Image (cartoon, rainbow, N blue to C red; front, side, top):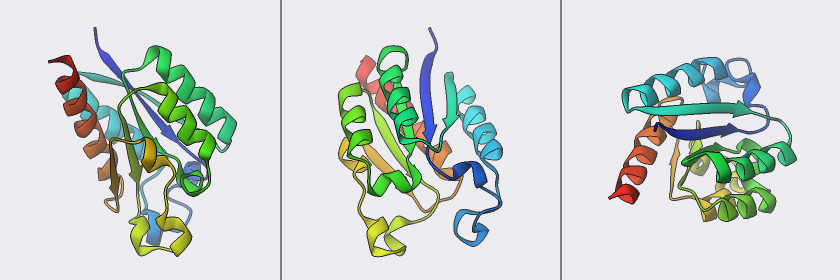
Length: 149
């Protein structure tokens, strides 16, 4: 049976390619989805790729992942720095989690340098643009393989 990874994207990521390309790059969220799916396919994994501007929707998807997914890749965007609810959901999901950020949050505003999400993640990838999603798929694949052995 193919392992499924939920790739969850938070607020304003639907504007990728248009919003602050000097920070987030010129690739669209659709470009990111295609790159992520292609890497997952190479590794024999399935991707369920979603985006919402609503915190509650993201929490619902994390809870859904607990029942039907094998891992989560999360780019919570601005909610990274504010959402205890997402942290609680990720911890309750009891799944491998890799946090992704397109930009290097440690070279940004001081408030962006704190992540609640990191407390519920196995690892964090930031500052590598859309390539970070591909690396997150590889990391999740490694975690899943180790759990299976």
